[in-house]
Structures are given as C-alpha cells and as structure tokens.
Image 1 (tube, rainbow, N blue to C red):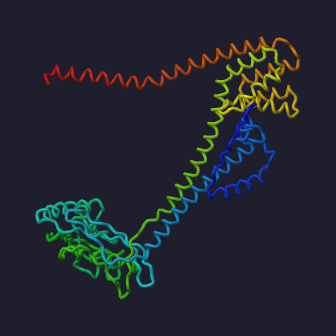
Image 2 (cartoon, helix red, strand yellow):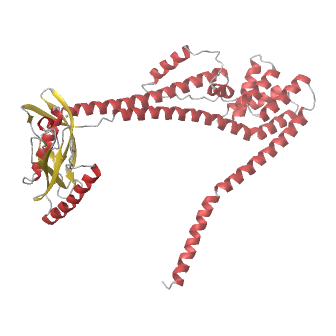
Image 3 (cartoon, rainbow, N blue to C red):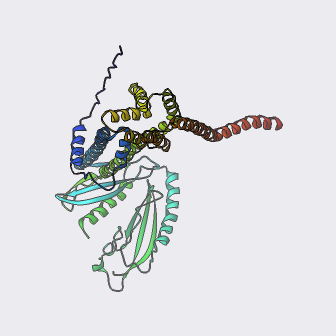
Length: 462
C-alpha cells in the first residue's frame, strides 16, 4: 500500500500591522475595476504560473505583505521624525547663563542663541565667543598680521573714507577669530563703535572725524587711526541688543582670563532669556522615510519579476529532459492522456520542476471536464515559451487529426532541444571565460611585480 505523505503546512507569522495592510488591500480590491484595459503584468505572470484561482490568492498575499512592510517603514520614519521634532522643541525651554570659551590658540566659537525679552521673542542672535589668551610673541605676530588683514578688508569692501554714507559693517575678529577688533569714533554722537550712523545729528555737508581701530589679542593691543568723512544718508530692539552684546564681548577680551562669557540678564530694563538654537532633523528623516518606502516598493516588484524570470529559465533548461520522457512514454503505446497522468505523479514529489506542475494542472483540467485538445493548448500557453507551445501544438494536432507521426515528430523535437541545450551550455561557458578575464589580468600584474621588483633590486645593487 502506498503511504500518503502528510504535508505539514507552515503557518506564516504575521506582524501587528498585517490586519491594517489586509484591510487596506480589501478596500483597494473593492474599488478596483475588474475589466480594465491594462491588466497588472505581475498578476498575469502569476496566472501563467499558478492558474487563475491560486494566482489571485498569491497576488493578494504578496500585496498585503508589501503594504505591511511599507507601513512599518513609514510609521517608523514618521515616529523618528516626530520624536526629533519634539526633542528639538522640548530643548527650546533650556536656558543658559554662560557660554564656554575655547582654549588658547583655538578659533573662537560661534553660538546661535534664541533671545526672549520678557514676553517678546527677539529671534536668533549670533555670538562669537573669543578664545583664551595667547603667548606675548604670538599675540604680537597676530596683531601685525591682523593690521594687514584689516587693510585688505577695507580695499575689498570698497570703503571710501572721504564719503561714508551708510552704516559700516566692521569686522568683529581677524586672523580666524584670534584677534578682536574694537572701533572707536571721535564723535560717538554721529558714528559709534558699531559703525551705526545717526543721521539726525549730521550736518548737510557731513562731518570729518577719526575712526580708531583697537586690535586686541590677549593682553597686547595695537591702535590704528583712520580719518573719514561721514555724510547723511536710516532700528529695533534686536539690533540694539546684538550690538550691545558684541560690545561686551570685545570688552571681555581685555579682562582677566575666564572660562565662560556671562550673557546679560536684562537690556533696557527688560529681562532677557537666552536659548541655544537646536536644528530639527524631522523633515530630513521624513524625506528619507518616503525615499525608503519607494525603494522598498521597487525592490518587492523586482523580486517578483526575478521569480518569473527564474521560472522561465528553469522551464527552458528542463525542456529537453521532459520531451525525452514524453517521447519514451509515448513510445510504449500508452495514450497521451495516460502519459500525462504518469508524468503528473512526479509533481506531487517535493522540489518538483515547474513543468511537471503544469502537467499536473493539465491532468486536473481534463479530469474536471475540459477537452483534451483545449487542455494541451492551455499547457503551452501557461508555460509561455516557444518550445512548449510547439510541443503543445504537436499534441493538439495528434488529438485533432489522429495521425500516427506523433512519435517521430517528438523524437525530432527532442534531438533539436538537446542541440539547443548544448549551444546554451557553450554560451554560458564563453560568458564565464569573459568574466574571468579581469581576475586573470590582475593576477598577471601581481606576478609581474613579484618577478620585476627583485630583478630591479639586484641590478641596482640593493
């Protein structure tokens, strides 16, 4: 007695998002038009492999798993983006009262601070905190280099000393922040040390004054005087606060070395609140999430297409052996229906080739009432390859006309199939040789080096 094989079907483990993905797929199936002009090529390919009923189930399960993975990636990315955005907002309430200063010889540190004056938000202010003191010789060298850099800045900025008609944007530091620059004016009522011109006090003909640039590097200073003429030419609390804080930074350079710079608590009798500017990476993570979802969708489609290509390749490689077995069984005198039934038994074995699964499907079609002629034609259509269509045509012609030349035709087709199989094997060998060409050339270069280097050393007497 034949023992029936107990096939144990493994139940797939679904994630927590599987019910949501299944519901989305059911809604999509509900509103999908059944008679659309352009059918889904993936579904058509699955129909050729598994038939109409089973292909619908496989395709639906594939789409649900795809949506489940996309939902997981999307929710994870959106969650990370939201967490970063909330973290960035939560740190906005962190107030600081001091800013660390860099060590001696290092560049100054630029801080971006959010300032709140009482209940009013003044926006972001950029503060350049200077470094600690340098050695005396280094300070003097930096002052000389800063003087040359300041003159170059004047030429590059297009500063016309005989006709200054707008606010001057003085450099705050020179030599990459190692030298602080403080400007003083002989007439602070007209031009202050920040370069701001007060038009209401300017005469129509302008005013000639002296602008003093004090270069400070640690404990060393150097004073430069420039005569300029200011002519008439036109602020909010944020601008005034920015200038005042920068002025205090310049004054802190000449004071005793400290580790931090104390920010002002009030300005113009208004309490201030300083908060570091923290960038938010939420939009960037959201963009990466959408890009990842798109890449994951493309990868799923490519995997499905790859399975179809692998099936076609397997069918093409197994065609000669299948045709040979069909010819041998047909030569015994059995009818074609019994020959297909005999071959269909192999489809029940594990790891059966796709061609025998199609044979089993053909036998079941004939058992369900489908005519033998139509079943053979459907067999060739499902396989989808020209050689299988030709074989199905020979079988259908034998059923239609009842000729006795089927066996001879199958033998000729088998010989031709084996010749094509040998030609395919030769092409694969040639392609393998071509792929091995580059590694062989690399090995040749290595061998040449191993031979030439000792020879060159021996000729050179090394």
